[in-house]
Length: 327
Image (cartoon, rainbow, N blue to C red; front, side, top):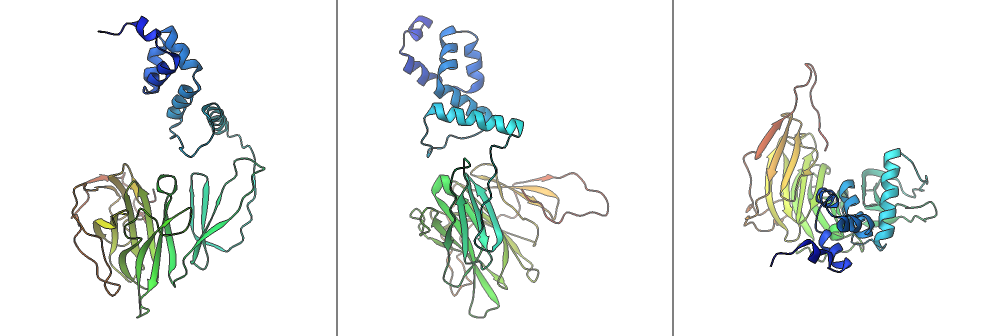
């Protein structure tokens, strides 16, 4: 039997709200113009108002948020109004008790900095109001390795991926590894089958790294010092430890990694002045990379001959060249 408008209007208010919570903002506008009851529900429900304003602001609901929807809506409105009018609620200076160096990141209200000795990363939760106290916490590596970069997926997986270099016995080369750690505890991450992932060996003791994490995929670009002739773009499934993709390039080709989706990665290419698109295969049958004597790895992964797609950037003026592109 077909539902009639009168049947819909006889439903409990809570059920109508639940039904409307599945539509998007444009559909809500259309519905509000043809039905008085539904327009009233859309106008007075804090849940629906918060959901639609979140869509317009392009934000995702934070599952760790403890405020009710009335308070969330109030915070969101104040935040959007502050951005629209460049209104600053307060300023606060945070004392730094270590020598910062190299690594800086900001995600979900957490600010992270590297340490000059490259043995720790320090972070704090930024204040939401002037009266909030701020405390610095650190995650340390105490086994002779140096921290060169970090990747973060804090709210998705409570994950910090610490990229380290460790000198080999010759003291000429160093191995690059990824330590998968629980951000909240600083301990090995419980969802990672292998908490230390071997990446490669580099000449010297340092390398430039670009790293990003989305879903189960961890992507990084390693650019060694000027002596070497090969940089690498790699993708891991960080939960299984499998290296899914390995793509060698000339140094200074790629500097950053941009996830367009959990399976589509865009890399700005400074050598060819293009945007290179890679697609992560979903049916890969690789095995986790292993380090034997610090320099051999299992080669059962996919090594593409070229990106899936290259998008050319506009031609630059004569006499100029692109040194690096950061996304």
